[in-house]
Length: 232
Image (cartoon, helix red, strand yellow):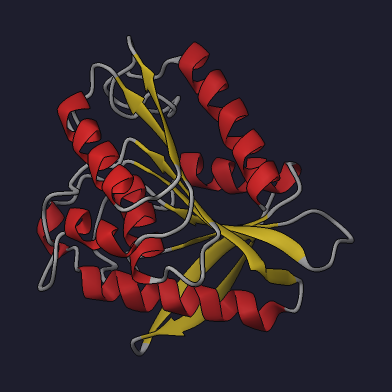
């Protein structure tokens, strides 16, 4: 089981769920970007699982300004500028902890969080050493004012690992090809894996559409941990 802490972001109190190995100092850290359903069991399990592999992992609650939201809330509340403030507040929390090696920080997310992982690594290219994207949809839209998440990829510099379902529609494999082309054009090291018979959210055992794919999940997780251990 992990723990909770709170930080200030834009005058609001944002909770962060975190977990870490016991008795370690100067740890590599992973900032976990949650999916549409927010700080649910899947998100907390991701944090706990990363801690069991030697990382300090933390998931900020991006819904802290919207206490009335439920998991299936519409997308129009999402604001990229608020995400920027929240990611910055999370990084400040890492700096102030005393047990995080700020030269070894990665960002990881699923679904909406995959987009936010791409987004955070693009907005803060000097802060993240690597980025893990799990089927990040919505890349071609701007949430609020500013460039789209796809356009912001021009600022991304760190290595990227991506996991995508072959049956997914958001992002589709055509979309993934566009991500690949953009990163190749910019000289960004990246490895994308397609899981041919997997759909969106295939790593979530609680997915309401029944898209959980245990074999693909196991393979994606092993690849992710290898990537994190080698990169952080």
